[in-house]
Length: 181
View 1 (spheres, rainbow, N blue to C red):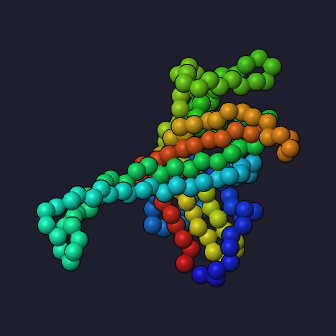
View 2 (view 1 turned 180 degrees about the vertical axis):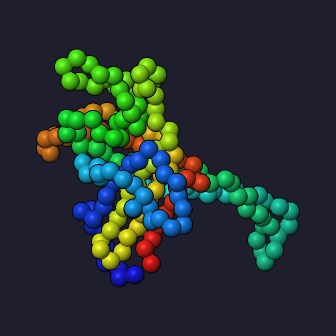
View 3 (view 1 turned 90 degrees about the vertical axis):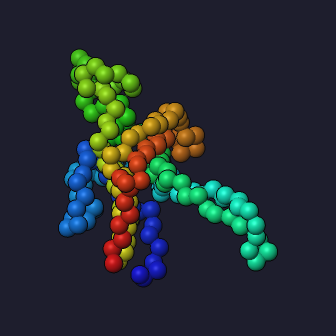
């Protein structure tokens, strides 16, 4: 490890319709297609594994006897803010459906929660956040990710662009962290 920090410009966010992890393919080469770069405020929350304390009778070394009851790991989450560029982006399509409805005049219409024309939520998608400073690389992968939130579309004020927040989550078994040795 070089200890050189990885900067925002060295991060890539990609999504795919699903991947098949194997021991011979690094995740950053597993995702095809172009990166989605109009993002900021990305937060990766690995699964948390909590525990409850169970008090027992007696004491040892002046402390109450106790055990820790391990709980199952929670969901892995990824969230961030998307800057709108006037065209469909893959994040919105994951939430509303991959195809949408063709509308006269060259439009495509999407509707959250509709099952018409394939507008169902995509549940077999994968998201890659790859951090690479040309010396070190860290890949975060959310396989079988489900987008659960597309936030309000809002004007940023001083920045002068429109944006919205998103959140996706997956089971602990579908969350991966991969480090280049």
